Amino acid sequence: MRVIASVGLCLALLEGCATTGGAEATAAAPPQGEALAGEQGTVVMARDVATALTNIMSPNALPPAWANRVGTPNDAFKAKWASLVPGGKGEVVATLFDVGAVTTDPGSRAEVQAKLIVMSDGRVRWSTVAAREGANVDAKPTPGLPTADPVVSALLAGLIHRLDAGPCQVTFLSGEELLSLPAPLRGELGADIPTFADSCGIIRKHRGATWGPILEAAVVILREGQAYIAVASHFTADTSSGRLVLEPVDVAPVTGSTMELGWGDAPQAEAPKPVSSAGPPAH
Image: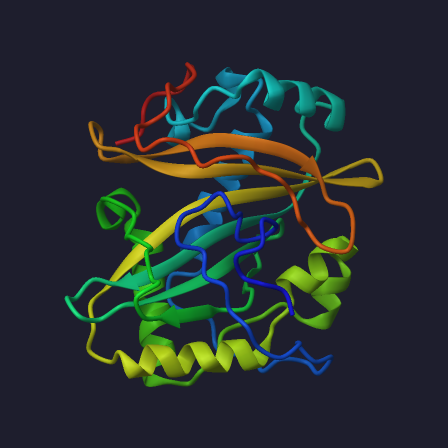
């Protein structure tokens, strides 16, 4: 069983990653739910984030929506980028967002984590949704997210409502779609139905609770020649502007049986120093 807190797809650098046990995902095709309202609204964000991270070495090419909102990569990041992405950009395969929600009411401690997958052609899918409850829950809502990104906030609210009121279904990657991804990603992104069902059960135990949305990280999967490269970034909240800022974290090859990639430590709470861009700042 993959662990939702693996350094691979949950990015262990993030606070509050839950360790969720359960049975192995079976080979059976997972049930598919109707798309959640707001899923397609994340496609534009995913394309902007992918464009920003693939142009990290060319700040003047950043999309206007992310002008002055992308941190400066450190020397280690630059060296890995030059080595792993010699062509300069690579071909975007998918953009993965680490998202979730946590209860904010006194006496109610539960958190939900998931990976929102936006394929390069605009298809929106989900990985396994995992949840936990109790004293070990330490996740916190992303500061100012409802204002900074109301689309993502509304989508996460819709996710919690769907899994609470039913049905316990979202649109997972199909077997055919998994085959289009590099083999190391299939086990990480394929649906684990028992864990998903347990998560719905936990959410329903906290019916009526107030949930705060979480947007923690983005990973852009690139194809460079015959190789696949993961470019990881962390979202931070810029309290002075009320906007989200992308902090580039690491570049690593997608290799091995799992994506156990060492992304390093989480960035500090303050917003990173942005690189300059010719585009106007977003409001």
